[in-house]
Length: 296
Ligand code: R5P
Image 1 (cartoon, helix red, strand yellow):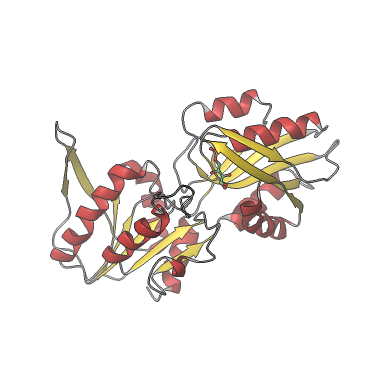
Image 2: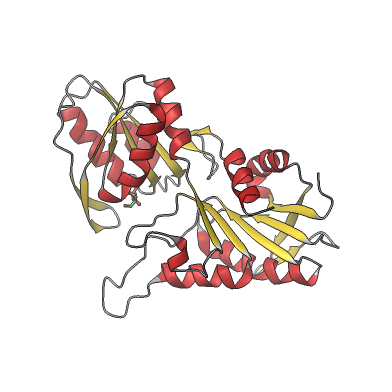
């Protein structure tokens, strides 16, 4: 253990923080929070801080958390941190990656830049990179590091459902599904999707015979669940013997999980990038090894 490093985390990510501190062999402290009646936050950090500080903060339900980070990061520097890295297992705002309507903010660019202004490095897992290939396109070169849970999920799926057919619901998912299929030694195919609204998608599944096949749908995230629900319904209609789901980021907003079960999905598995009842594989070692790659 190096005494000049520390992992800082927030209490709502305690389980992953404990695992990560062990994988990093690093002391862990928590940033305490108080919400004032008007909604403002008061943060208290441990003091003094060592030279190298890592902050663990996933950005699911991002708006409050981004404000917290904008306060915690400069405070960390004031308290002694010379190198400040963000480990954000889920990086929000990555899907808003083009001006779909005139005047619409390309939030991906602005949120990435905001984080890069505060942190020396930003490590994340399976960010939704669709129209760009790398975080280097939205952050200064070398600031962002992208890791992937696809291999972990592929190996998990292969152990749970040997011989499963992996299906990615849309073109973007090809990057994760092909890697998971390779890791698990599984066949895979990719569909296509048009999003019509927050809760409405049209899906075209790949033209493969799924009758009597155990299918596992794999994607980077589930939010409303509509992408996975529509895909599962079509697969079951086409004769799949079972449909399971594996995602990196289990956002599962609102009734998404219940609706997925109602649609006939058997198992739902996720990584613990976002704490959720479906967590099946841990990203702690992945994050620790990723950070070490940076020379940590
Ligand atoms: C976008 O294409 C992503 O990869 C996911 O497919 C999408 O964000 C899932 O959203 P929802 O669960 O709301 O359909």
